[in-house]
Length: 458
Ligand code: CAP
Ligand code: MG
Image 1 (cartoon, rainbow, N blue to C red):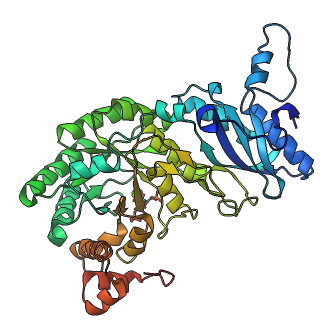
Image 2 (image 1 turned 90 degrees about the vertical axis):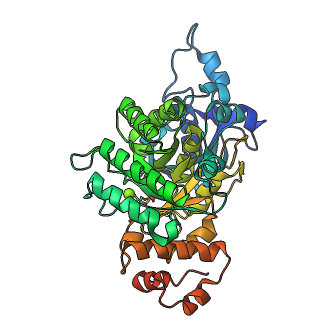
Image 3 (image 1 turned 90 degrees about the horizontal axis):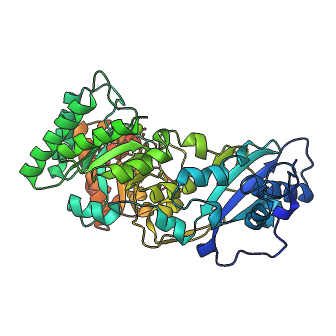
């Protein structure tokens, strides 16, 4: 193990003015097997991590004239707040170790190499707290919650939408037909349709056809009903120019939203699309995030018991807000996907102007950066909507795919059930009482079909 003790702060040291002058990371580590897992080793590991992620390397190097050593020494990061029982510590990096507006550069430094170090068998980057100048160097969402509410003409409540299931199978025409049903069922109260993460430009469902046909339906129904509808059309491509071409097509059709898979396209793609897209709100699906954020041990919930190399979804959400998405899949406390027990914390990272610190996160001041819609999705149905809405609040997009299209009485009933669930919460009604009084309602049928989770307290 490379021992660089000068990267360890003296006990009690704290960075001065952290929100002006420092980037701070919070790490949880496990020492590799075969190395003593004692406090001394833990200190050395923390120091080595601070070294590798800032100005150092594994050994002493040439220190004569022109070596850069004096500046490297002055700029070195410091590991501090070491807590041996939980194997957690923080690292403080002086802001000028980074190019303020360069996410790819920031991450290469902060968490670029450390998860590969042999001395560790696990590391989780729980959070990174950024100072004002770095937050201000990123664009943040162009529309955010209020901008979307304005163009959707929807001052209150969640947005409700459905992703076609089967995941792939419908032609563009069939998807447009589905959009018509979703937009008109339940007194045209439903808001939108969303492409699935793997629906791009396929032989049997071309991006251009889908975009033109679904938006034609959207315009027609908006005209008829006077209610705004949306389509989250998936522009995902590994060639950013193609994403922008697709965004232009959406714009031509009068759409207000584009969708992209923010992990598979990458940080540079999200940043570039945010800056160059023709004025569309960005819906970000996080497909593949589990390879970065999933933790098999108890570490996602209890410090000091991690098994893998990962970063928290809380951190990924923070980075996406900085890069400028308007909506992000942030997990849901109910449903089919692991939510890391983090959904509410992710919502706070996406939406508050000052996200509080917790045992597992550092918090963040946002300096007026716009808040992001938290998209709750993955195995949701009408019966889970009340709890999700109560726990995550109304600035969310509720997405039910199977949970609307799989209703035993058909798609219209699926839509109606979700609208009923929304209205019960928004009107502060007692859901159990409502169900007793409306035993044949679409919501009661959904509840019967999928069941209410007995742990839910309504
Ligand atoms: C949901 C979904 C989303 C997941 C991804 C799907 O469909 O469209 O991709 O929500 O997870 O294909 O599974 P259902 P997350 O409504 O039919 O489950 O939102 O956690 O990123
Ligand atoms: Mg999907």
